[in-house]
Length: 369
Image (tube, rainbow, N blue to C red; front, side, top):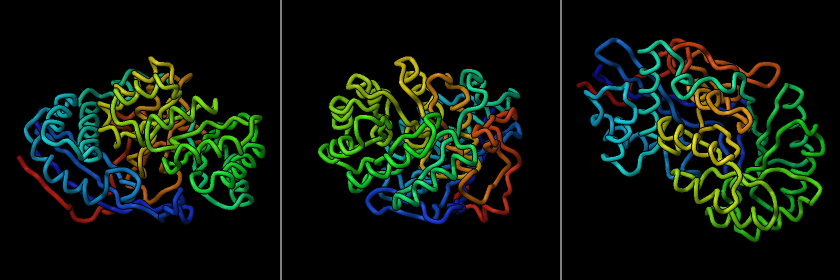
């Protein structure tokens, strides 16, 4: 089997709940997605998607990843997409950056691999260990009464896990997180995400203001692994890393420093091939694992579920199902049920229905062998 054609499309995945807010004044109502279609000489095609979260979140940006795709796609024409490790090696030799661009090429190849053997991708990633992964919702930066009500609404809708955005004034943020935690049953898994916006001193002030009687895991308080590890050591709070983990080497360094969890974003680490290695390493180290990506909608949800459902349930925190809070959906994908869980599709490949190409418009890039 050979890759004979690659086409790149785009559309905007809009936030369905108004304005999505993060630390340092970062907010948006949606982001443009990059969608890739890979066709083969055997008539099988694979799809994948990623949307960089603006230009101030990770080194990946929409325009940068589009430019990377223009350079990377010709590199894999003629290769066998059923060998994602070979594809990944080729892409890494061709370019040091372009992680999100590499990720969607890799993920589309996994889609083809699954379809070629008639199996869901999560089976090929190790099997269905978590049959119904819990999904998490996000509560952004807001006034305390508003944030508490949003959290309670999410819980009333069945949500089992909440990512609570912080990263501005540490004392005010601590008061808000404390109020949310006290308003919800202990069974709701809450973790507070600063998106790397604090220095060490600010993170320590937040932990002190939160109080000793409440434990809410802390996601990416500072930019560097060293500072985040120091937060874990000095506060006793479980710390999850996200933005500073790109490689297995980063993960091992973090664990050695006292970090207890990782948020794996497929586009940040370079796709499913590398995410699987990182996931398995984290599991071997006994770390908690959240599965996420920077932005997206239907295909991002399906992709995330492949990694989440093949993760040991004892270590799986939650998975981000973007289809619940972005639109439009370019394909049918598993949705979060009333019990707050999403069950992966048994369709071959990455687990989505027919693509609605009318939502994608004209191709941005096209490559033919």
